Length: 227
Length: 314
Image 1 (spheres, rainbow over the protein chains, first blue to last red):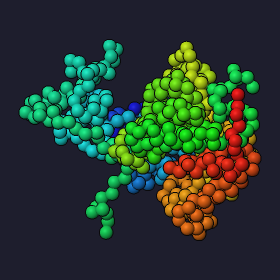
Image 2 (image 1 turned 30 degrees about the vertical axis):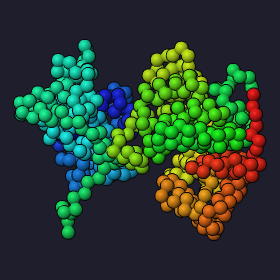
Image 3 (image 1 turned 90 degrees about the vertical axis):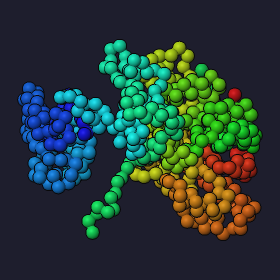
């Protein structure tokens, strides 16, 4: 799932500026599941903005709403009226949702209330781990289902670097969170599968043109287009 | 101006500071380890230009790196303008190379974003783009003037640079192009070379905007020019090079002469006419001649344009 973290209140306040009618728009899909930008969180942010305006003696009205998915046009129709009524929209969706809103409701001012940070997996309640870099050229069939592109700090393709120690990545510092060495994990899992030989393959440089390095990507499924 | 007042004291900087019309050329390093190619190009250009650009993996094709190539041309008596792009190096690598450039006597640096990998011979490469060209200009200025690395750490001995940038007066959105140049001036650029100009009237319009903003007084502007060898090159640039504006008159004129020597002569004649016209424009401080794989034409063009001998500056 796509995960995001809420921006600090001061940053949101700076983006909102002197606009009087503020709409905080949540999204009830990915960002709701990661407890950042669903309807509940939109309501909380709206309250914070309202309290702050009152404390500062500013005349501002702050409403909140949520779309089932901000990234799909048809769901945006359902909140169009509230958007039309606002001077500015603080979107709490991921970067995709925020841009859909800004495009759909142009020239309405739409600003982000969150920082979209990764394609993550919920490891336990309230903890998410990065699992996919959307590189467009998946290799995990050869790496025991563990992605070296985002789980190795250097995106190495041919096993661990010299900094791997006790199963940990060298980026793990004394005061930092422990980071597993992805290639250590790959090695261990390949062994349980009896596929260690995959570690001996010399892989060529990765084709990054299928990632964002190739320019903005577009996917078209011709067979799925309406006839 | 005394030596201590120069930013870097390069030949190019001195030419500008003495109010002389500058002429620069371009040298693309080879796609092999044959360094003699660079030396030969330097020999061809020596005496005809004040400095020569050394491209940095131009069009995203691997070549000898710009720093050693810059050192080679300087060993052959031509001052280098080392190009540095943001495509292949992050801020650590660029700053390291910049310190190295200073220690090796290379002080003119041209800051570029760099052509995208997809245009070159390694389209699968990961693009770095840690910085953009405006960040790069600012980083070099801070190293030079404030003795600071990008992170803010101080250094004992700062490098000296005369900082260049490029601009395409024909890029879109057209109304943003002057603003983009202004941003580069604010970041710290000392001189600017334009993309090849074929549409002189449009360039004049752009220069009017530049003058209206007073930018020509804040940065040395060099008009870029590519001599055409034949109609094929003109058509190629018109149709396949992004951001290039080649008017039909130019294509027609080149199409009207025979291939080979007559076409080469016409190309040189056209280049000379354009140099003379560009030099008349208020705010144009020099001309940058990009004779791609036709370096031998440069001395003749510069001479026909009445720009020889090149001024000697102390």
